[in-house]
Image (cartoon, rainbow, N blue to C red; front, top):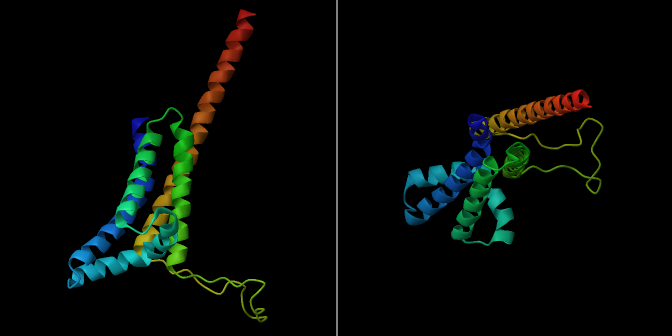
Length: 179
C-alpha cells in the first residue's frame, strides 16, 4: 500500500524536479555566463521546457523566485495527494495532469505548427498535419515514464473498485443472512 502511494507520485515529482532543474540551469547561467557547461546544460533543458515557462510567466510572473514557489507548491500538493484518504483518485488525476503538462511542453518545445481551415488548403498529396514531433531521448524517457505511471494509476483504481465491490457484496450477503 505504501509502496503504491510512493510509486504513483514518482512521475509528477520527477516532472517538477526536471522543471526545477531547468530553472536552476538558468540561474547557473546567470551567475557564470562564461561557462560552456552552463550554456550546454541550459540549452538542453530549455529545448524541452523553455516554451512552457514563456507561456506560464503571464500568470505566475517573470521572476525565478515565483517559478520556484509555484514548483514548490505543486510538489507539496503531489505529496499531500499521496497521503490523503482518497489517494487513488487524486493520484490518478495528478499523474494524468502531469502527463498532459509534459506532452504539452514537449509539443511547444518542438515549435509545432498545425494547419487549420484558415490556412492555405493542403494539396492532394500532403497531410493536414505539417509537422513531425521530434523528441529528445530525455523527453521520450519522461513520456514513457508518464505512460507507465498512468497505467499503474488505472490498475490501482480498478483494484480499489474491485475490492470495494467485493466488500459491498459481502455486506449485502451478511444483511440477507440477518434478515
